[in-house]
Image (tube, rainbow, N blue to C red; front, side, top):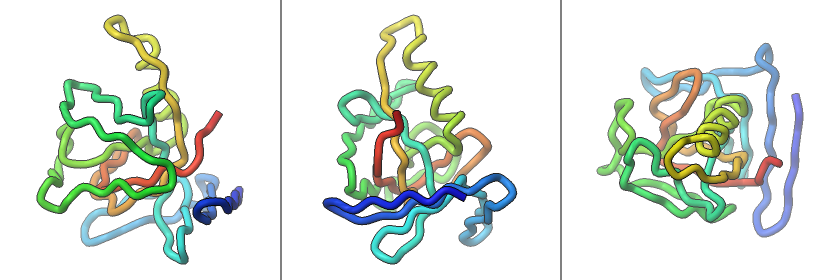
Length: 149
């Protein structure tokens, strides 16, 4: 287990867990096991890895027309009526389920044939996740915490 604490404009604590020490997040029938947890203002959230452009915008991959600009340390939460609970590319905010999956997305963006671009990866707190697989997590919201170098 690795514990990272930050204090500045806002305080948070990240706990990254090894695979054997992880525990499940569940709400209703939805369950997944995040790579760690983030404590913000006495509340715990699943840890994710968010890949963004150099300007902290969503990637717009797969012709997704909805581009968000994320501010570090602020929640970006979609309204309930815009959430689409299946694996389409809209109706939620995607983050990497692991650092490896985020690095794979980063590599894809840099090596794509048409319009390659550089990206940044952040630790992120995930708000109300509702879809997950081994590669990505789809949620209602996200907060960027700190950039990984």
